[in-house]
Length: 331
Image (cartoon, rainbow, N blue to C red; front, side):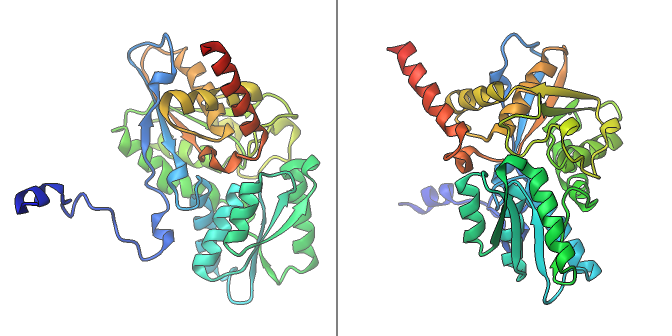
């Protein structure tokens, strides 16, 4: 190959990916992707963008909050030599804490509902973290209560980030997710749409965007009832409400049926080549409802993770049914 042709294929220093001293340096700076094609009959002045948080090194949006909480623990001395990191989680925060604990040199133990996906359990164990199971029938609330019991039995042994009540959870998104969205949209974002679990993502991101433009609308996607299949999301009225959640900071809350969120996941895989988890399907459902009500806007939704960590769950079984019906329709 000639020198000229070889030079054409080489990247300039500005184009080259950054070098990282640690996996922790790779948290954040996730991309926005245009998903406007998922809407039909929308105003041509409406754009839909999804922030793909699955590109974080731990595979989800929770890397941000976990990193901020752990670093704050070290800075304040709450987390130090001899301490074990312990928290309750439905999976993604646990993966993030396990990854960060491994990178920082702290042991991690996590309390999970026993019905979280096999993929999440295995990823957590691959990072060397321990797991204590709570009843899956009690959901994330059961894990919260069991975690509290363990900490109270030996408080000097553990550092509990306490993601539901730790102000560094939303602060991570105020410091990173919000500014990234503002910059990526050139300040044109008009709506933020995100699911609510701990609520840290929507609280911190929405708070930042409103400091930049008070007119930005913050919209929560919430399971429509207490008995739902949207793993990681909370139906607030029937749940232990996180201390970091402030409903008065929301402009709107949209109830999402589980089946509809699943359907949007299946459609995105086929139409956009993006396979995501059910909370992303919920965010898209809510975003399309918002989009149908406006004539002009830039709607940014948070896709917390990708779908590869749900391949042993009901979401995947639904994919199989979806594919079967597609074949029947086309055949």
